Structure formats: structure tokens, C-alpha cells
Length: 561
Image (cartoon, rainbow, N blue to C red; front, side, top):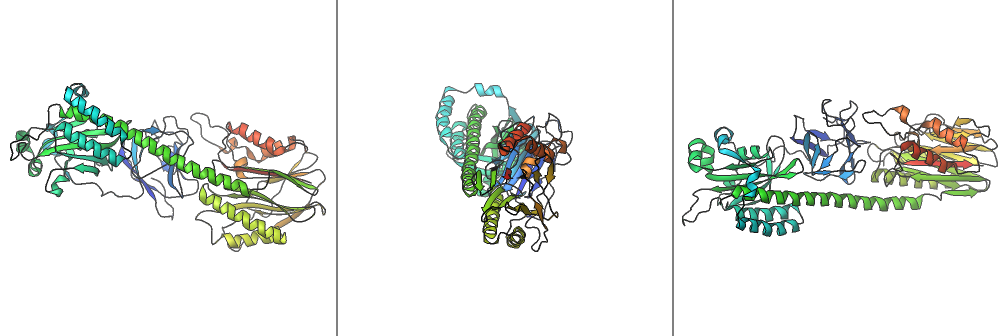
């Protein structure tokens, strides 16, 4: 089970099928919850699960809700029967089915173990009366039923929601099977509980109409069609069936790939001939008809679910693209000159909206303030904190040009306002080319260096201050150093330092696979002063990652004087 944090739970994963597995509580945390076989995973699955990767998938939470991302697993992660693309987050909605072989899990925003409808516990008395309908019976449909199926197919594939699809299927199922009562049921957990998506009934007693044979559902949960019939035998063996006057019943599993997404349940109750003498029991080949109808419905449901996932993904992608574009507006130009000081800076978000920022603030002739910050986490909340931090710093430094004062004031501002579990690592420096000095403050950042003309690399870190937001009254040290002739300063975010090389199949990520501080310094040392060291750095990081898409936000600023 996932470990919990003091934050209130906002999601659950409930086992529908597969080996025994406790319900998994999802609590938001920085970096998300990793699911897999490795001991470091927050959601650890059994080590002997052969089709589960060590680091299989990650669940993350932001303002849009929960998302799931496949981490390049061998056997894949499926949402509603659709294999999701690696490293592409997919939003989750209530009732989504997540398959990590051999488990199928249902996602729920709230844990509702008692939401199942009442079922008839007839397992001991009726088990022998329930028969599985062989697939070959699907080929024995009469011409009339084939015509009904063709008519049904047009309406089924025109449905634009699961509830609309359910209503159409129930109507056509009753018409084609001759059974008057029908329900579209959705599985809730591995104990066989289900909930009603839609229903049709001729019963004048609603409480009885909401009762269904548990045996049929259990048989159908094996992926086969179950049928109950023969009133004389039932009457002698099952009191519960007699009390509810169920005389005939059919249950068809609705499949999304290898996952059961629901059941089509039909039955007849009472005297099959009624007072009028008109027969209202099952038609010949009713089970075969319902089997064929269920397959059409399953295909339509699969298309609906895939379309729904694509729409969710597209909506979030559009919002993130818009947010990323807005972020680019507030960043300074990629390069600029301020008297005898020049800079080159670039920020690349890991996905769309980033939590990194850099800024340059001219403070008069030959003085330039440079800032680089990295907000923990990703998504909208990280980007909002990033924008707020950048704006506050810009105004403070423009007003008084004191990096120590600016950082302390920023802490007092951010601490009571920051989102839960969010903080900012920050480097702030004021370059004075006239006085030949650099005065800087390092607030838990640590990724800054200076390359001297002789090729040596010197770290630029001072005091080991805490990140912004942890304390409201922090104590920071500022440091002033001389600016050597021909030297350059480079400040980067941890997206550069911590970028991993590709993990070999079956391998485990390790710190030795990171791009690292030393390699960053080596790129700076090898790049001549008259060339674009930032472009060279990003090219090296991309080559190390083996992909243009980096794992995290990556930002770098180079200052020359």
C-alpha cells in the first residue's frame, strides 16, 4: 500500500481482478507515487509479479486531479483497455480501469466500499443451474436477430457517453432477447460488488427490481456469458430465486481488452405467460444474441473510453501549452548586454509548464543582478509559485539592488503563501564590472560555478542556506568575491545536474548515471569564451539523456564580463 502523508487522501485504487491486493490510498506528494516492484516505490507490488517492471508507472496529482504515467514498462500500463504511451501523463476520472498485469484496478476519488447494489446470494443452490454460453453459439443467430443487431449497431456507435450507450444497449437487449428486465452494471471491487449505470424493469416493486443473481455475475466475471433457466429446477433448489420470482436470466461481460468494464444483465420474473397468456420469457438463442450485442457494446465502449482519454489529454495539453507560452513572456530575452556585462540564458520546461526561472535586472552602469530559481514539483502550482517568486525578486532588486535583503524579504513573503510541500531553491547575484566584484546569496541551490581563464572551475556557493519557504525568518549569508579577468559564471538548475542517461533493460537508476556538476563544468571549460556555452551545454545534456525531451525543467544562465 502507498504510504500516507498528512495531506487528506484524494484517490483510491481498488482491485477488481488479479492476486489479492489491499486497496491503495493515493495521497498527494511531491514527485508523485511510483508503482512497481522495486523497494523504493511508494506503491510496491509483489517482487514475484513477472509482468510488473521495477519502476512501472507513476501517479501524480495537480490542480486537474490525478494522472498516471507509464515509465517505459515492458508489459505496459492500460487505462480503460488502451495502452498508454510511455512518459505521457493520462488524466484519471472516476471509475477508470487501470490494468497492470496481472491486476485490474479501479480508480475512485473517494473510497466507497459499500456502494454495491444488493444481490441475491444464490451461490450454494444455483451454481449447477448456471451454464456458460459457448462462443460458437454466437454464430447460430436467426436472420431476424441479425437484422436486430444491425439496427442496434447504428444506434450504439452513435452514442456519445457511457450512460447513453447503456440506455440504447438495454433497449435493444430486451427487444432481441425477449427478457423484460435489464441492467448495465459496473464492477466496484474484487468481491463482486457492482453498481447500476442504467436499468429497465417492468417490476412494480423497485426493491425487487434492484436484486440480481450473484452467481451469474461471478460466472460472468470469468469473461464468459452465464445463463440461468429452468423454473421447475430452480423452484426446488433456490428459495431466494423463488422469492424474487426470477425464472430466467442472462449475464454478459463487457470487455475492454482483457478487462471487464461492466455487465449486461437481463432476467424475467414471475409467470412467463402472465395474465394475458402472452409469453414474455427468453426467445430462442437469446444468450447468443446478447453475446453478439455485448461484443458490439464493448467495442463502442472501448472507442468511447479512448476518445474520452484523448479529449482529457488534449484539454490538459492545450492548457499547459497556453501556460507555457505565458511563462515565456515573462522570461528575459535569451541574451543581452549591459555595459561591459553580457549574459546568455535559456529555460526549457520538462513537459510544458515549468517551475524554473531566471531573470536579469540592470542596476545601473556596469551592474547586473542575476537570479535563477527552481520550484519543487511540476504543474500549475509550481509555475504559479515560480511566477510570484520571480516578480517579487525583480521588484525588490530593482528597488535596492541588495541580494541578501531581497532573499530575506522573499522568504517572509513566500512562507505563509506557498502551496503545501512547495519551496524554492534560489541563487541571486549582483555582478559589478566596475568594482570587479560579485556579491551573491545561495538559498539551498548549490548549482553555480565560475570558470577562470586558466580553465579551473570554482563552485559559487555560500552558507548552505535553506530553500525559500521553509522558514519565515531565515538566516542567510552573502558572499562577495573578486571577478577575475576573462572568467565566466554559470548557474544551472537541478534539471541539468540530475538528468539521467537511459536506464538499460532490467537496470536500476543510480547517481552515477546523472549528468552531474563535474560534467557541467567540463562543458563550460571546453567551450571557448566567444562561443555559445549555453547551447553547447544543452546539446551535451540532450546527448546524455538520449532524447530532446528532458526529465525535468532545465535552466542555465552564463554571465561574462
